[in-house]
Image (cartoon, rainbow, N blue to C red; front, side, top):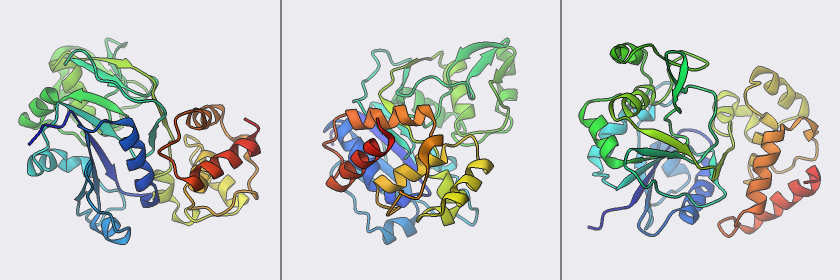
Length: 301
C-alpha cells in the first residue's frame, strides 16, 4: 500500500453540519497522495450518513457521558489501531479553513502553522518567547516526531503536570495562561526534546467558535433572535458570535440573517471572510457561494 504523504486529523464533536464543508476544503487543499481522517461520534456518523471515501476515512469514537468530548486523549490508540503512517501529520480543527494550499516544510524538525502566530499558549523560556504553540491549529509535523511522542507515551490531550516534567530545561511556562489545553505536553516535547522550530505560513483562517458555540448554546444553532445573540456575545467575549452566525448561514444551518445587525462584527472576522471570498471557490457548492455573495453585499466588502 502506498504511504500517504500527509494525514490530516480532525476531531469533530459538535457542528456536524460543517463536516462536509470541512472535507471539501481539505480535498481542495491537499493532494491525491494525502488522506483525511475525521474522528467523530457514532451518532454523528449515523445521523448524517457519513461514508468513507477515496481520500477520507471516518473513525468512530465513543464519547462517554461528558458534554466535552476528549478525542485527543485517545489519539495514540487511534493512530495504532488504524495503522496511520504518513510522512507528515496535519493537525486540524473543523473551524479552520484553507484559502490557499498548504506546503510541506523542507526540514523534518520544522513545523509549519498555516495560521498567524497568536499570543495564547506559546512556550516561554526564562520569560522570553521560545516556541509557538503546538496544537490542532493547522500544524503540519513530521511523522517521526509524532511517532516518537507516541512511543514515549506523551499526552496529546490536557496535561496538568507537563511543565513539571520539563523543569530540567529551565524556567519554562506558557504565555497568557497556565490552564491545561490540548497538546500542551506534546508541544513541550517538540520544542524541548526534539528541538523543533515553527514557521507561520498564513494560508488558512480560524473561524473560531462554530463548534464551541454549538456545544455551549445549542439553542443558538438553528437560529435565534438578535437579543439572544447579543446576550451570548456578552457571555463569551473571546469569540465573535456574529461571525459564527454568518458561517451557520453560509452552510444553511441558519435560514436568514436579515434580523441581525452586524455592525459589531470584528475586523479580523471581516478579513477572514474576505480571504475566503477572494480565494479559489471551486470546493464550495452553489448555495454557499450565493450566501457568501449576499454577506459581501450586506457588509459592503
